[in-house]
Length: 507
Ligand SMILES: Nc1ncnc2c1ncn2[C@@H]1O[C@H](COP(=O)(O)OP(=O)(O)O)[C@@H](O)[C@H]1O
Ligand SMILES: [Mg+2]
View 1 (cartoon, rainbow, N blue to C red):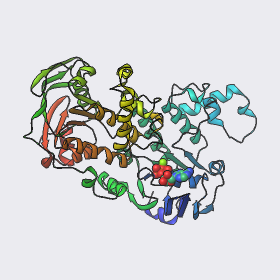
View 2 (view 1 turned 30 degrees about the vertical axis):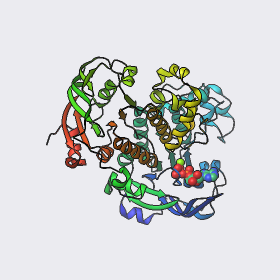
View 3 (view 1 turned 45 degrees about the vertical axis):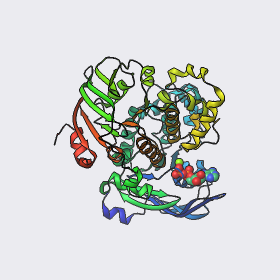
């Protein structure tokens, strides 16, 4: 959109001086927010910053204590979400709002006003629902199935389809990718880029800074219920966005300590490790008290390498030494016996049993497939240890008896980390430990990593997030097409040099 037009037309959405109190909480204080047609506008901030509340005020879920809202220059105040939807404000909520007992098709058409016709003709209803989903590029969803039976990611896509089928002028997505896998996320990104050309204003809430940098035109940052700033994404760095969100310098965020100990004993030594063609002849060491970062483009072999060190990849060749002695790590069980722990981004499949409570998850010895070991554990002692650990990790949960699946991603990750700390391995391997979690929980995990290293643990962190890798590592190894291309000392690394290295350019 041209600058002239942007100034001559009122923004499609304008919220001014919005204040919202809850008992004992000032959720929003005098917040201004505006979005224009044809833009994707990120709304970012830590958990509890007020993002969802601002959007619920927009949609009429909550009435503000003060402030005004205009759509296309006209003052509006919606009394309920259905009224907002009729006026073109569609919100995909963070907490899904599908009716579990109804079919996918019934959910998509729920609350639609036009009488008769399609709503009574089941066959027409189903084919129309299928058409809407396929238009969105969503395949493999049986529209006759009850919504409750669908995996979370598909529920999320149905929810988006439902809102989009109302053809909103203002579309709000509240953390839509939290439940989505990479492919589904890519699908959603394509969809949203397509919608831009239809002169819709899209408001996009996410903790994923990479997504925001790639997708969004502007970003508004909230902190503690207050507006921090609205910025143009093109002229802002990811680092700046993080700093606006947390309200301090990134250095403080990572709390990088003085634990780098290159003269400390070598805890882990890997020699000539190969895994088929994915990892080729990689050799390196990790010292006691050291945090080593391992990065590369997606698929450069870093995940396979890390998994092999935990016995999850078997077609390996090469030598692994623990404290100088060669060891065979042929299974996770063997890895654990050799004092190695693994924490991955696959919280739902590899770290936690979602329907078990926080306490049980903390005392699970390792990945889900060792679950049966739990039967042998002395219950009372473990319970006490679990409660103490939940406290130490500052896990935010109503009770340690709550199912772990009800916790936020960040708190789930703290439970997994706590679980490992109870087993006290000397070597901890992390794969994308903070992926998709909010910056507050990230900071707590970084602080734990720093403390662990200070206590003499050896830590290998695999991440494609270069800012994270730079922030926490003492040394950084870059893999390129399965081979170890370059190793940087912390002081020699910066974002530019890492970017060049992950693309195969040695300096
Ligand atoms: N319905 C509610 N009742 C009481 N407090 C609420 C309610 N909804 C949100 N809050 C509080 O308002 C603040 C902002 O929450 P929210 O808008 O959900 O933040 P965000 O979406 O940025 O994580 C938090 O302190 C939260 O606990
Ligand atoms: Mg929220």
